[in-house]
Amino acid sequence: MSRVIAVVEGQTEQDFVRDILAPWLGTHGVYISARLVGKPGHKGGVGEYERARQDIMLLLRQEQETVVTTLFDYYGMPDSWPGKLQAKTATTTKAEIVEQAMRENIAVILGPSLEIKRFLPYVQMHEFEALLFSKPSTICETLLSPESESKVLSIRSEFSTPEDINDNPMTAPSKRLSGLFRGYRKRLHGLIAAKRMGIDPMLQECPHFSNWLGTLAKLV
Image (cartoon, rainbow, N blue to C red; front, side):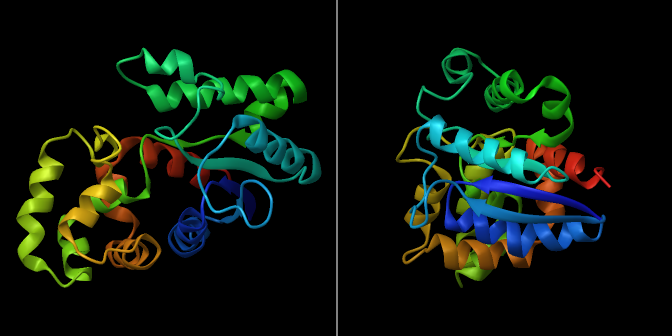
């Protein structure tokens, strides 16, 4: 079995790796666990690149038989992140630009052969909740509001994929859900909905997410 450690930005992402991704990857012979970026007590958020770089470098050096990946949101990244300034002027592939820049940055220090084989960063465009729009009926059922499905479907229909859902800080996926469902809580309702939905709708609707998981699944 191949082993993967994901450096993640918050507790919701940590739970998502443990409860949703780990069981699915396990069926492919890949064991994944998650570590929260930064010092103990960190409350989430991607923060400055130096903090993430230190954690990534430490894992690559200490866990020499392990693949290291990431689960960070592009939207909240400061301009200090590799590739972020370049990505801001791009019309597409913003997350991929940052991923490639991160690989190159780490490779400068640890060598290109290590970077290619053992560091596979993943950057999602916005946030965890975007994945929940892969199957709107599930989040509505979870929040006991089936009558809201048409509103969630309407939001989904405005974008090519759930991964594209965002316009500004007030219309991020989590803000949209909070506006539709009073009392929505990310770590509670979001994760319950993700468990009920399962991986398959996310893989079908979210190509960047699907490519990442597909790459990890092939590591074995």
